[in-house]
Image 1: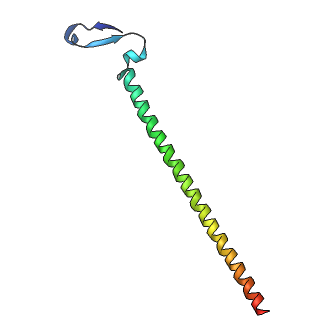
Image 2 (image 1 turned 45 degrees about the vertical axis):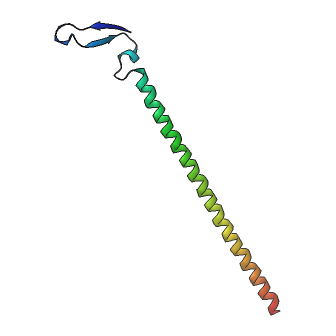
Image 3 (image 1 turned 60 degrees about the horizontal axis):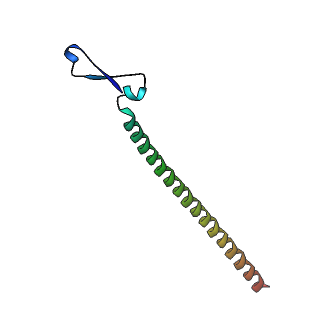
Length: 87
């Protein structure tokens, strides 16, 4: 990276010179990678939590359907036994 020094009252400031946007950006290349890494980790955690929530919701739904099926089987069995004993 080449640097040119400003003249006059701004002589203490060092201004990057070049066409590469990484050299002239406010944060530089390292900060962008850090921000994207943090964003990637946050998105990965969000995705894992979403998948875990979906799996638990599916299991709860299947449990409810199974519970209703057991109740139906018990009701049909009870009605069947009652009708046999009345005959």
